[in-house]
Image (cartoon, rainbow, N blue to C red):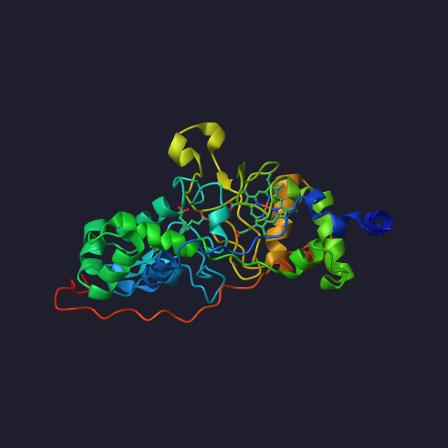
Length: 330
Ligand code: HEC
Ligand code: HEC
């Protein structure tokens, strides 16, 4: 009896193999975040929001990776210390733990290594690791939090960046409508959105945008079929290797939450998702999509918006007499 029930269920599911077996799809549901060490995550959350890790005392990680706006700044390129024009578009921090490496050219191995970059970058937070350590050390509540999370009295840049990375690892966006559909909820997507997903596969987008993050897992040339024209001087991976074959190779961005993370591409040149899809189809695949096809793909892409991280805005412990003062104007 039990066997036949299982068999029947199997046959029924077989009629709708996609819904039943998301593993056959090139995109998989995004797993929810696991919090391994709450003490690290809480500390990292505060540090992510703390503008005292910048020279001006006004720029935090959240300034350019605004968690109220899909983890990006929605600017073509970011504004750094002294209103300096940033060199490249700010990618989202949402689901960034799934990236093969960090930055458009992958020059940071992981989130912890990455987090040290902006603090000391003169065009971003314009601080130094020593100064960041001095600020954190001057605040007793931070010292206690480091003691709790890392069992040490010594404040180091290692602990600061490790805690920020621990927080960033919790920034997952599960349960998008697309993921609910992948898991078998037929009602989760409209027909237009399902058609858009079919087109996304048939056109060949999935060759580069696949896996749970719908990207983030390889470096590919921007302009496979037709060259990409831009004023932005970034050379992609070639900037690191000096090799001509790596020219214009960038990390394939995740398409999770892509409706929130405009403008698009490393130079932030395109504000509309329709335009970005059209550029991709022509330059990467040599395909001219009709407005109807583009519209369907865009409808599908919007179903990739998941549940955004939700938490109380962290309260930051006050500075003390020993805390170095901000220097916003020099
Ligand atoms: C002034 C704006 C600015 C600030 C402040 C800033 N970032 Fe960024 N962030 C960027 C830009 C721009 C990039 C892309 C740089 C590149 O690829 O060369 C980036 C890249 C990243 C990435 C890599 C994402 C990916 O997909 O490759 C992560 C993660 C990240 N930042 C986290 C942080 C953290 C943590 C902080 C605070 C310690 C921070 N950022 C502060 C602008 C900023
Ligand atoms: C050959 C690999 C490849 C293919 C095929 C491909 N892409 Fe991309 N995609 C990339 C790369 C690389 C970038 C980043 C390019 C840049 O910023 O210069 C990108 C960027 C994007 C972006 C902008 C994301 C952001 O946050 O800036 C969207 C949207 C996008 N692709 C959608 C698509 C669609 C839709 C298709 C199919 C029509 C497609 N892609 C096909 C490699 C690919």
